[in-house]
Length: 212
Image (cartoon, rainbow, N blue to C red; front, side):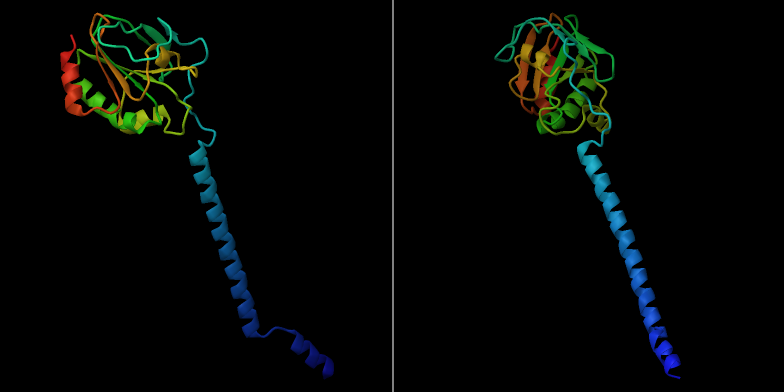
């Protein structure tokens, strides 16, 4: 009798078994929730750091060719734009030389004013098919910012993009001191006008129209 009574007292009651089951269920739910939270956190970290995916890098040393040496000021109206050739964002090469009216925009992917102005330049250029729009992406890894290829894809932009090298050879030869710097160049290769910083669309349209 005594042994049986002790055995019965040692077994959990139905209520105790139900409570234990509830605790196990709560632990499983908590574990799943923590696992999901950890996975989301890891995905966010991958997105913020680039996750080891493709990132556009500056042009390798020796791959940028530009006439003339460094300048400490932007080219002025009447000065010739130096011909250049550099690796292109699309994997080919982007080259410029006199012969066609051209708008050359020098930009940095982390520059908010560049991000705002480039779609406007593309829109205006579409209305001026005789004028070439060429751009130079420089200072690529100076500050965090969108990848140039992703930025162009997100905004439906398809103009040529020359990649400057880590030394900023193109920007230096063009005398760039701020972003964006946009040169409006006649077919003879001479600078007609230059703008530095974000410029309103009406002014850009007038400058495009002035090129011959």
